[in-house]
View 1 (tube, rainbow, N blue to C red):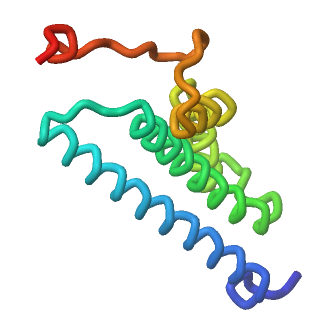
View 2 (cartoon, rainbow, N blue to C red):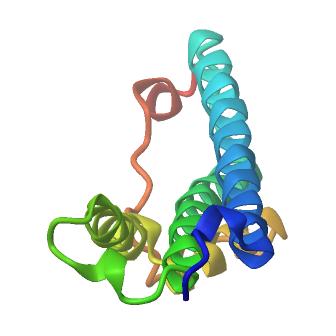
Length: 139
């Protein structure tokens, strides 16, 4: 419409929102990774509630990233859907990641919420737990 996207207030607002979503996702990812490394270095078992929180963190990171890319794409019209535009590739990639079984919001968020709320495992939960050697021997 004769005005560069960067000169449009709404485009800058979309960029700011996407920037903050990615920033928040990165901070949550880094925090979760630090927590994971600390627990593993200490050779500590994970409680079901801790596993639930980590699960919710993981699914939240994937979906925040997906929402950030979607927000940008929604403000750019049809041009970013061309095969030569790198945004369409990023959109496809993040959709595949966010819809993978390990990130499927409906499955993973419900499981994480149940575990975090102390409601326990469900027979239909994917990725059944495996006992560690230490748990099996009781040491």
